[in-house]
Length: 383
Image (cartoon, rainbow, N blue to C red; front, side, top):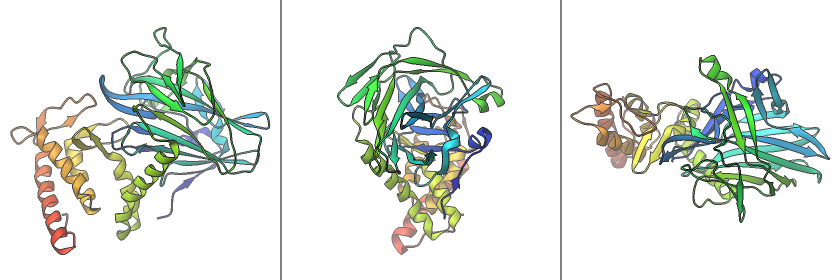
């Protein structure tokens, strides 16, 4: 199946009409519009589930990106504020592709830059790779992280409690504005200037259209700055992990992880390849539990929807994942009933019979499929 390409974009509305999401097995995710402007409180460059406090938190909301070409500053990022869209970096996007990883191609005055976003396959780490495709020696990239540090269903305002200082430890910048939340560690192939500030009244258009509050203040600890050289990518790595590999290693692992999911689908019609790519984004592992999300970026696990999704996993030969999901829901059940859902805080909904029939059927299909595959090399019917 040919990759879906979008761009260029002549209007802000067209640039925010398409959204992307990419996830890790840990449940951490990165999601936004193709323009880079967040239109929902759930959008984030890095959001991750935490155990203490429990919940999924938007940590790194977005980036302010500026390409300096021969002393002229050109914004690549896009944000919406009350009554204004600024900057309008979406106008520089030539193309966007989702597979195997979200990839943007920008052109500014004849200078072409490729940006790729990747999640570490098993950790709360995001990498943004920037590669200059034009031979120039007068191009500098400036990247400023804009952070939220709040539970994903809420919003934050500028406040006196935030510690806006950032510390440099080796190649990493550490930022922890609020006690009780994890440290955000960031690295970039250049220098860091600790020019902290609040970016106030960022607008989330889709939230407002749904009748919710759609305004937030984001805190920035400073900005990174690095010269670019054609063919030599620089990597912004942002992580909540104690230790994280380098940007190049994470990017390679993320691409391999994405392609590995689509390989079995190639024996099916072309549509299956696209479905397989989407399925990997809904599978999450938290400790010993394996689940399927009802939807992204704001839904958690629901029993009925997980059972509906399992035949697709079996069709692609993802037997271990399917049986792990069933085993997880089996542990959650009581008296033959399954909880309707499990939320971000680990709280279970009331137990009902709605998912029970689907559970019994999928368990039978999973077992028979494993036996048929192991014995004859063919996959049984998944009806």
